[in-house]
Length: 383
Image (tube, rainbow, N blue to C red; front, side, top):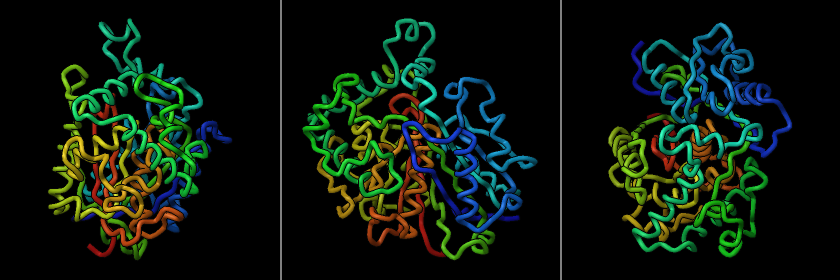
């Protein structure tokens, strides 16, 4: 079977929570079942299942070993990606493009309430020089990144706090956002005066990890058109990885996102992202990362992203859902950005819809300070 295009034909994510009132396996079942229901399909229609889970986070090796039944992958072609769900979707997309699979479920899930994420992140540091002193973790790395960006371009903490305010207000309009993130009265003063996590990062600048699960369904063009009249096509994807050591990187910018965007835009025929992109869903683990990523994508010059009109009615709406601040489900946050972009294109983003959204981008990341970046270009219509 010759496959030229891959379409997203179904999606679902459960509402994120800081302490989900269901078990991990039930959350996975609900996400996959919900995606199948959205496309009016059954488990028997699946030909492959790709999961995004992580052994560190689950506290055991082979973290997907007990997810076979709830994810619908029993007696199916099944595999796992130990990164964000956006990378699992790349794997699923390749399976469809191989011509061997007509319907692939891609899911990601995490239960952050069951493990100390910031402490676990120590395991990603150098075991000889960094881990013994316990000074570097995801939180302190984010602080280094924010400080580097501020110092390089003269950006003030108020500018970064404004990003957090925008996203928390957007989350208040998103019925599927993490309740703790929904702040219709969020203010710059409130963000700056929230608890300091690692200077200059404050609590409300941080997308705190939470519980949840998400799933998308992928199909080749002909199959996609049989399933739905309104598939959303993946017209471009790019991905890149920077060096492991923070000291060898310029943390004021994201080279991995620059490379990913260049690759994705070339595939999708995007020449001017400011004009050609209707809406962007960017995985911002910290508020300042939204600015760094927006600049890497080409929405503004370096150090100027804070001046963008990026609200829902602005020139370039960024994270109308609230972004990762509306629910940072580790191993699923990037996949949720894809789902939110799909909602925008299909006109299904209740309460936070961007009018006339035709072409959207969605990103995922992995590693300290977005060491790995992936970016999708998504479009509606019969492409």
